[in-house]
Image (cartoon, rainbow, N blue to C red; front, side, top):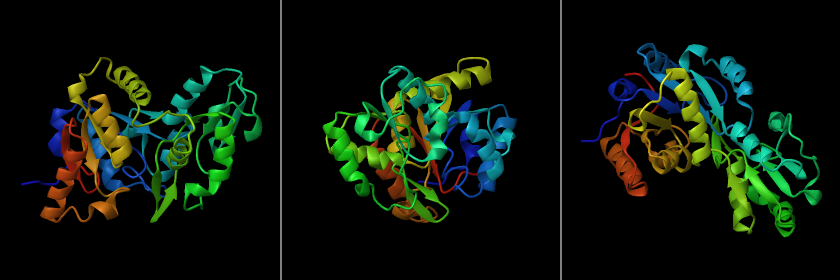
Length: 288
């Protein structure tokens, strides 16, 4: 019979975790104490924890943000962001006229780049980090702008492939929703974060540094609440996955304490990701 799996049941089988942040460790407002406790206990027994996030910002900005939300430094070894991956992709196109589509808080990616920063009408390349207004309810509001960019053959680098994120009790549109619309309109998009390979490669590099050795892929577990990002990323890149059902899919998944609902969740994920090793499902990340 399907059962909820606390991290303590899985810990002996894995030497390292690639753990999502928003929805697993915090909700954008405050940290989840049980999740923090789980990661601290996992590290105390020798495990390596690399936080892997589709945040469209430099990883150096994430450390103080985590501390402010209540995630102590003892809970993880390092942070890898899609923002850093996006910056590396931009460096491959130095000096290309660049339009930043996103809020000012994401401009840390632009530091030290040599691209001329231009408006959308003069761009050849677009760095997409998120909506210009966090209050929008649909990416469709940007369709006229995206159509103009497509007609100019502007290539887009999406620094946050997440479609939505749960902020407190509210769902907020992310850059991934805008990028998907741009693709539907015929635009070219490169995704810098999960589920694509480059962010996992960067995370494994940090895990090797933290461990002082190369860990076997079979001993690394991806922890996350996003099916199209965390779980798909695990499946595409050959990692086992631990699904946190109480995150962005909580309403769709239902109450994991009901055996039939939990069994349905196991079945849905295994049907959708046939090559995935699904190590377990939890309602919220906790040690036991």
